[in-house]
Length: 559
Image (cartoon, rainbow, N blue to C red; front, side, top):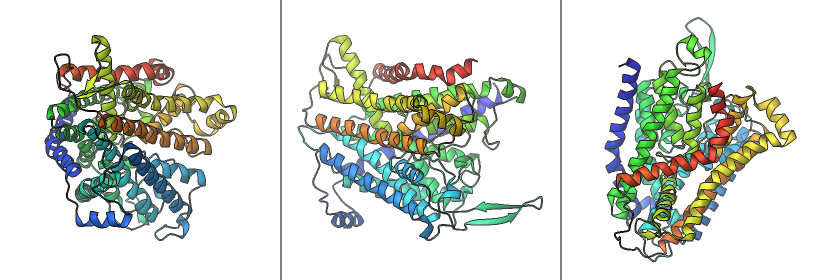
């Protein structure tokens, strides 16, 4: 067997083993956090400060209003910090970003997208990075976890008009899960060589006698929550390809594990809170099959290296770090795009056509294998609702999931969820080429690779924004009024419209009584259901996106 294939199997097996070891304790711990009735002293102080009774629960409407008010306030705060950057301490002498770039960046980090239309080390000082962006890395991830937990309660509660308390869930996710684990991860990253300082820009003498200006910064602390919270925004423009963020193969593997740990453990949290751990195992099984298939296909595409230039060079190494190689790049790239992280340790724009197409497909699947923290689980549960609905149509029975009957209201909400992101992706891409003035600006300023690849770059941008991923085909110049505004709108709607439908669904389910299983009930913990769920995810995405993929990366790859 080829040495590269052995390397791929060894790395993937190591990652899988560690994530599997974390599955049970981490999943059960998160379930404990969201079912515990005891509050920490710091939590009680925070609840008194904001005037919240932690023992009271909210209806889905009140829960949603809390999320929206908290998130809008976050957008305003991050926007304001950027606009006054010049007078802030530790600004490093950097001016304030433009209005449209500040708008885009504020929405990007509050929606857990972390799309960056700028070079971070040349645009934002330490205060904005720490007080604005790093804080949102924590709380935006916590919002995703809270929404997933609210949906789990919808299945677990009986005849209830409530789904929990957002402020309690947000606090628990931040203080008990993300903050302690990120602190440990930051120490590991520092030990592996990731920088952590306030050195600013320093001029150093190179080995050849020349000079180079290198930026420092509190990188490890931001890198830890960037990965653990599936955020993805880099401290440096090169993101996790930069040696200060990701110095060696061991740090690279550790970052992959951080991206996968919480999303893969969330199904265990589901099973524990439902009192049926087999249900969580079935969801995790479907996620695992999709993940392994995706990383295998992307690795095959890059190792095949189809194309004149790559075949002459002997490998598809353009845009990849030699310290990671093709295998380290494809495992990281798959993990980043199949979760909602969006971090990169190689340039996806330089991938082969089919390799880049796989990065697109990972996002188009809805980022459910395992997806972002929280968002992946509630996305997969929506797919499970569609799956049991289709199964019910085939046998002529009312669909059930986890003991709850699914009526027309639940199916409508699930359908609206599924339609939201494709609508934003396709509309944004189309408008970029249909409006004459916008098209002229896009073609003259943003697209440096005209033709099929240029179309693919625009499609990738809107797919990434609407799915709250944040990665990019980096050949696209996105720091323009059109892209900053349009992608900002796509990120906002792509985050909060699905949350509206998920919380409405949770409220509807919580008001239902559980029904006993009968001979006609579809078992949702067996391999047959896992296969049905995987098929539903793939077919729904394929039917939606195949035509537009055929216009871009697929057509490019077949040339």
